[in-house]
Length: 220
Image (cartoon, rainbow, N blue to C red; front, side, top):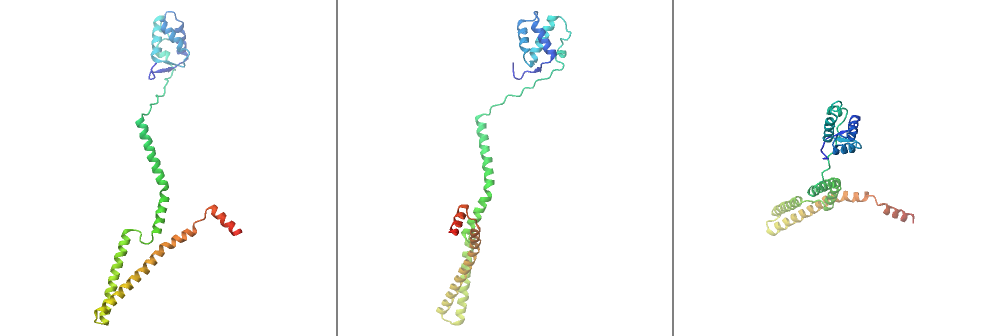
């Protein structure tokens, strides 16, 4: 029997028909054997029920109660679930790859906050000049400031003495002063980044093992 063949739920009318067909000597031997087998089953294939009913009606010579719509009255269709299709190896590999991508995306989303904190901590450890743009800007600032102070010192030396050596010495003094000012400013800027880092290290709680060791030392 094909898995797609229509079947009917066995009712009292169908059971009575099969019982009479199995006992009918005028019916074909194969149909009687089939009717006997169907008596023990909860459902009956439509094609076999139709064949048995038509042959039994011809053998009986009467249509009383042997019409198909009368025999099937009150019965229900039996809907069998479709067979599960086996997935091909290519499809299984693709599904596995897609699942791995979903898991990796979920993991990246989960650790994004941790990596963000790590990048912030690395930026603090690197100091004030964190990028190439900041470093180039600082270098240009130092050059411009040193040139400006050298020019101011050179002009002041011209006012003090017409000698070239005096003007050059005054310009060098302005150059050294500019370097000192830039050094102080860089130290102040760097301390702004080191301060929060030191405070965060102090506020970081010790592990439970370290706390227990510190308490034991204090007790001693």
